[in-house]
Length: 545
Figure 1 (tube, rainbow, N blue to C red):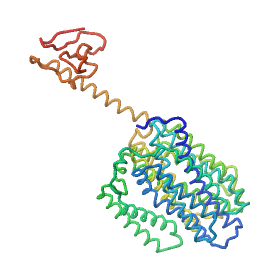
Figure 2 (figure 1 turned 30 degrees about the vertical axis):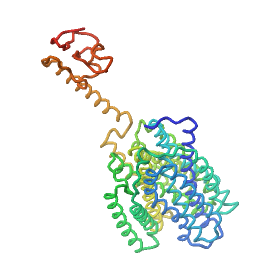
Figure 3 (figure 1 turned 60 degrees about the horizontal axis):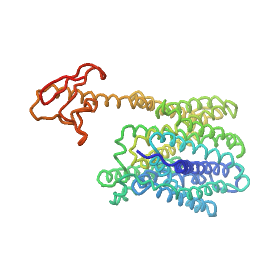
Figure 4 (figure 1 turned 90 degrees about the vertical axis):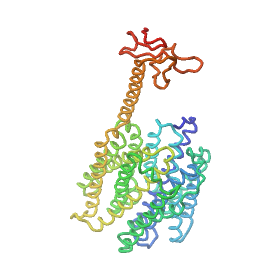
């Protein structure tokens, strides 16, 4: 168990861990605003929407592809080291995005930035959890999750003004500045090297790591471009499955595999991974749907950001509160509440024909749902792992969310273009109906998990079986001591010390020189403070009070 860090060190750990998620989500929000501004806001560009969306895909694909591998490398080589590397790469990519003039070079810079984000996301939470004691880890995950809502909120609040005054590239400037400050703070963090990692001198399976990254990247790219690339995406998906199979095959044979297969044998991890995937489908689908809907209605960029602000506030506040109530509800209870809030809010939004107060309430409800799902899914996956697997668990969980996000964005895009509901807003209504269906699936998954494993609903119920087992062990040891006390004594024989529970040995039966039990063995009675009890002596059985 990790020792409690000094107050200043604990605050620095939380600041850096939460700061990483803040700039990652701010960068994602900046990309969404930039695409909308160039498409609808009158920015000086003649690129079609299919090319503009590459601004998102160029960073999204490397993040999803490298997360699992980066998490595994952080567990093997040190979490602070991977965090610093990720911050450096992320800052360089952001600076290039601000300065490079050509569109292909901007996309390359975004890919570099995505690779940096993949390296620092799992390391940021893993170094935080690895240094904090167990009773503070749920709160740390809640803070880490709420920081994403804060990053989104800050970018939405100031992004409209930045873009209108300095252009769409200026949206990425705050991320670079904050990233430089976090890099300076990260140099003061503890190494975050788990027990035994210094002895892992064997080289990890780098070929398996490359195969895994290529498989996930190809799969995400195939999903993201399914509407525009046609049959090519089918070939990409098939190739991704082959690469994934080869990576898993190497993981079964290599001594230091790129995929920690023991993580998937941990109780509850696979359930949490599936719930996280559903959360990615839902949250990214709604994230893509909201600004496109408002821009389609003719709202200027500044007003769009203002309409989205309540959602971000609700995400940040609910994620922070989730760390307070998770001890009562459990991670899957939190997931169930979040899925219900998202689904109900989408139903309310379906009944609206435009921006109204009810629509604003639905937007806040979506924020509450996403804010509950974020810490719930993070706890369900991360805390199912062993401490030396934290970075691997975070990488696998966030990768699952990103893959689900690619599915969500692609599904929303397809449904809006090919609606199955009639009316002037048929595309929007169809996309909202899909979000309702996903909410029902995620909520059902959490409910099934709670019904199958009741201890998943809260921490107190996890401790009860353990206490009963400890009591049972004590009772068995007492029975063994009673049986041994009633056996005929052999001259010069002694009772083995391990057969006598501590409460069954009177003070005079313990040698002060050796600390071991001698020949006097108490037979416990039904009342610990009274009654006549039998003891065996070298002369036979006798009684003592």
